[in-house]
Amino acid sequence: MNVERKPNLSPRPLPIAGILETGTKSVKRPGGNALQDVGVEENDFSSRIPEEILLHIFRVALPPSWNVYFARTLPPFPQTIWSSDFETKLTIIQVCKRWYRIGLEFLYESVSLNSIGQLAVFVVALESHPHLGSLVRRLEICYWVPRGYHTLHDTELTKALALCPRLTYFAFNPQLVSPSEKPFDISLPKFPPIPTDLDLWEITHLDICDWVPYQSTLPALLYLSSTLQSLSVALPTEYGADHPMLIFPHVHSLRLCISEESVHSGPYWSFPNLQQLLLFPTPRLGNDWPFSSAAKVFLANHGRSLRTLSLGKADENERLKKLLRHCPQLQHLTIAEHWLPSKYHCCHETLQTLHVQRESKRRHCFKKWKTMFPSLRSGHYVDASYDLFPILPAIESVAGQLDYSLPSGSYLEFLHIVRDDPEYQPVVTQSDLDDSDTSDSETDSDSSYSDSPSIEGGDEWEIEREEAIEIFRKLILKRE
Image 1: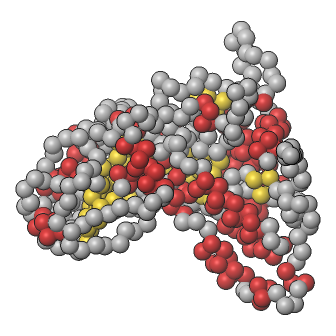
Image 2 (image 1 turned 180 degrees about the vertical axis):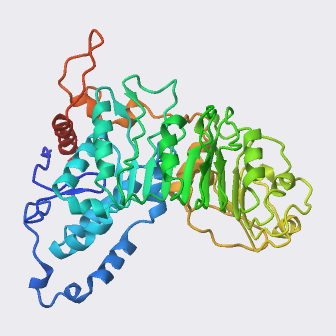
Image 3 (image 1 turned 90 degrees about the vertical axis):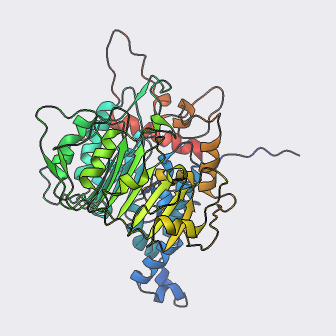
């Protein structure tokens, strides 16, 4: 006998990309029962564990942070990475009031907004509970803006930045969509102005995707240049006659996106203490990209202090030894396999670690690598997607005949397979931007729930905050 399964409509916390919407008096379980204080049970061992120890235990229970932070670099990446992290956090804080109080710190410290509706609810939560804003250390914008939502994005994101005074990491990385394939009714969100009136502004890490126009990010770069420690940005295609001199005295890590039209920074940028440089192509160029003259000039200008360098997959017969002459202190190098010369000769004297992005079944002997790099202590094969991630877990050293394979079913293996599929196009469709599964007759995007009439005669309709929140709540209820 087939039994129709009814949807679960019981009250439960509302997940908001790392945010748990609750009242101040009690916390509810998914079944609706209020949580009890741990202290009421005298024999409960966890009640005798100091809160700072419990917080450390909770952090260990979470998935590795690198795959949560950078999982969206290449769509369509499995959504389970982000959701498993979030679900683990929700599970911990729903145990009892004490665990909820302890877990608020890691629940709010890293917020990823994947829907414009989440932004509105996030701001309301911070306005209702101002103390939560001081817990937010990392904020990532991962949504596109539907038509009619631009004013909401501009006003609410500015409010969110002002409500997070201890923010140290700000990432502006919506999903990458090819201009020829991008749905007509969505567009890139506008990069927000920096609230310069905040004395407690502490951003030290700024990550801006290459789709954002450089001129719109220039005020933020100018204001934060003295405090930034790491930066991810596209090398501009033009600077303008009145471009100011940007000096980044504390930036030690730079991830630079290169396009065919990029122009070298010349006298406009200065990185006196740069130690890590990752050069990677704009996704529009694909895997084989020209190692442009702008990249060569940049490396010549800033290579002297480098300790770590990633050259990525450049489709050009550039001599590795010639490029590395600009980096006399280099210790760690990541290159694609085709960068390795056919004849093994000394390329660098001080290099200690070599990462090679494998492109074929060709095997390289560690002894031959030692010929190229006399000070080499370890060598690794890494996945072809390595250059897409600013941070990856360390790979164990291997000696003798080098080989490296990914664990079966790992996320990096998934990326490797996707990138090698000739039929795969790294383009997000409209269905990929929806907030839940769709059927043939309906969609679940933020804009699909709007009851507003179609725009005619050039009149631009803009959604209000309350309506956006209501649409977002409908999406959450439909997913449950």
